[in-house]
Amino acid sequence: MASGDHEKQKHHDEQDSDDENTVGNGYKAPQKIDIGSIVAKDESDESLTRYKKLLLGNSSDGTQIQNQLVDPNDSRVVLPIRITLLFENHKPDVVFELKGSMEQLKDLHSKRTITIKEGEHYRTQLEYYVQRDIVTGLKLINKVLKARTITVDKSKFMIGSRAPSAEIQTFVSDVEQAPSGVLSRGSFLVKSKLTDDDKLSYAEWEWNLVIAKDWQ
Image (cartoon, rainbow, N blue to C red):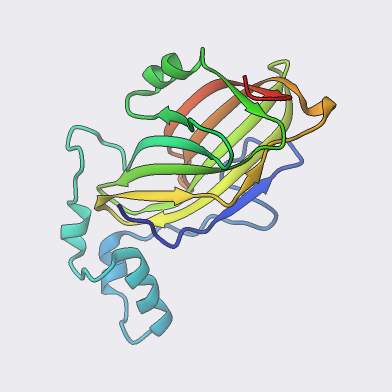
């Protein structure tokens, strides 16, 4: 299992914006470069060489990397496998299986209700494949709504850019803490989305969250 040097950041947006190409203040999506162009870049540039090493590993064959297919029948660049909420003081963990079409994911998770004890510490883990081309600015977005209409929180995990690989890629967030206190308890609707700087959506699903005084 591969775990890269992902950029582990979580951004909370005070404003409810649907501009998925803007992450945090001042972030601007970089111009996408294909694998062949990256391989052909001047190797005398040390910073570029380090970037190529991080993105492509030891391979210098851009065509071979670009032809890396995990599922030839799936046209997507990113193939999400699952997201797991890893709790520090509670088992079992919560798993969201992400294989399947958008419609299948919505049917699978829309009726799920996940209860989390207030103040509980946890990490978010994403497992996925990359095939066909480089994915740029991969990110996981969670939008939390009260009464299904009022946005109370919106977070974005910056996962980064990755080249195609036959190995499973893994991102694990920093430790998070569930909200606590009487005013934080209740039922919420969470809209989750895995997307990138090109605004391509690789998975979208909704689920119900309950913040409770204790585990139920």
